[in-house]
Image (cartoon, rainbow, N blue to C red; front, top):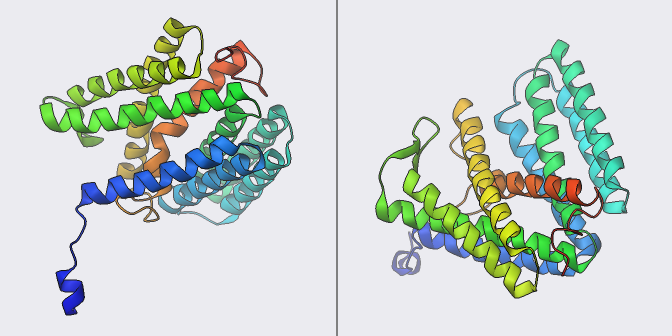
Length: 281
C-alpha cells in the first residue's frame, strides 16, 4: 500500500451505494427522457444483463443447449423491440422461445430455470420499453414508476433501520422488516402522487391506489430475487454495480413493478400504448 492510497479516505458501503445509485439514476433518467431508440436499447441491454446473471446463478447446471437457444430468442425479441416491432410480436417471440426452451431443456437439463430466466428477462425489458412508448403519457408513466419504486426503496431502507421490529421474511431476506415494508409503501404512494401532481395527471385517487399496489409488487420482486439467490447459494447476482452487486440486485423491484404497471395499462389501453388512459392529462 502506498502512502497516497493509505491516506485516501474510503467510501463506506452506504456512501458507495448512494454514489452508484445517483450515477445510474442520472443515466437512466436522461435516456428515458430522450425516449425513442435510445430508451429501447437501454431496456434491451438491461434484459440481456438480467438473463446473463440469471443463467450464471440459477441455470448454470445441465448442458448449454437450452441456454444458447434462450439467448437466441432473447436477442431476437429485443432486436425486434429496438427495431420498432409491435408489442404483440415481441411478446409472441418471447412466449414461443420460452415454450421451446422449456421443452428442449426437459431432456437436456437446465430447461426449467433457463426458460424462467428468458421469460423474466425478456418480459422485464419489453414491458419497460413499451411502457415508455413514444409520447408524453409514456414519459409520465415511466417517471411515475421510478418515483414509486425509488421512494419505496429509500423509505424502506431508512425506516427499517430506524425502527427495526419483526422481520418481513427472515428465511429469504433477514434484513427486511415489516416497519421498513410499511414505510416503503407509504413512501411509494407519496412519491407516485407527487409525480402525478407535478405532471398534471388526473385520476389522482386511482393513481394513489396503483402506486400502493406497485410498491407492494416491487417489494415482492425484491424478495423473489433474494429467494432465487438464496436457493442457489449466491450473495449477489453479479458485481457490475459498486455497492449494489449485479443488475438484478438493482432492478429486481423495478422490473416487477414495471411489468405490473404495463399489464394494468395494457388492459386499460392497449399493448403498444399502455400509458394512454392512465396518464393522459
